[in-house]
Length: 424
Ligand code: G6P
Image (cartoon, rainbow, N blue to C red):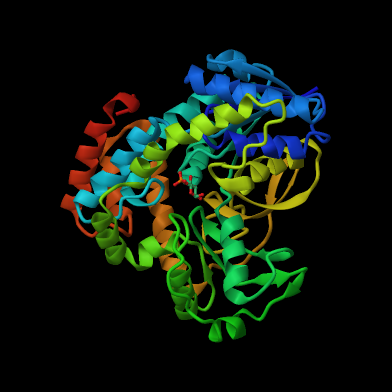
């Protein structure tokens, strides 16, 4: 039987992951799930929920809770990482420090993402060191592209796949905007995590005439959520002639977004912190029922389903087409072969094999390459703790137009996060 470790198993995203495991229970029959989290209370809650949900539906899955990393990872063939180092308190700093200097404050994009990388990378390197040789690390921890690159280059031989389900929800949003059914719609999202673009879209395998659809696209008013802004996305797609990832708004509407974030007054982390106690209480109430079925899930269904699908694709050698973060290997001709990219890949037992996708679209080629150069420097800085490399990373980032701004954000950020940055 197979052992699957979950690092960050007390996360609010776990109900969705548990549901994903339940859907694929037959494919994972007999599996031992090692739930690890240093937060014993939330770990116990999610363990209770999973155990009850599996029992109520007769799933042949066993859950063992761990508050120590080593025993959790020992013997695990798959290590699924889904945690935020420093939690929402640290995220609040990532989102607020750049904003004070006129730069978008966001947990994965820009300097906020850089600070998160500096906290995430040392933990992922430790996981790579502790995990069994040959184990697959399936990483959701952000910024996933940078984290995956750091592990691949600084722990050679480690088997790691970076994940993000952003494209799942984005493709659904585009189905709505383009007047197409979401079911059976597939887009070739290529680029870097949270900086992908799609020129090719198919419905049940049949190509869609994207330029024609975009020409007649009506720009909707409003409808923005914390992750998606259909109005701006439609406006961008018309200008570009292809589909942008939702995070493109931070690049192409940078100053407007800064003004909005400032006017809003609270960070996303603060908003989530305010709802978390009620959320965990509702999960606890649900877990106490004989047949729990949590409907309020952070991340929605897609987050957990997607991660479990990747584990199953590896484990069962499915050879399924999945969008992952992995080494380019020539799939995107506009980026180096050893760059970590987000790209459709065929995933089977030997890992992801990226599909040949050709060049990045011209209007965003330079931008994406610039983000890649930033990410490379960010990964190196996060591993080494070298201040000059860190400064270069921020200076290379398209959000930042001034060396002094880069320096101020760096100094404030490193000081604020000191307890989570052993490398600096
Ligand atoms: C999207 C992104 C993820 C990110 C998440 C944050 O799904 O693709 O990378 O972790 O948003 O969601 P939250 O509800 O915590 O703001």
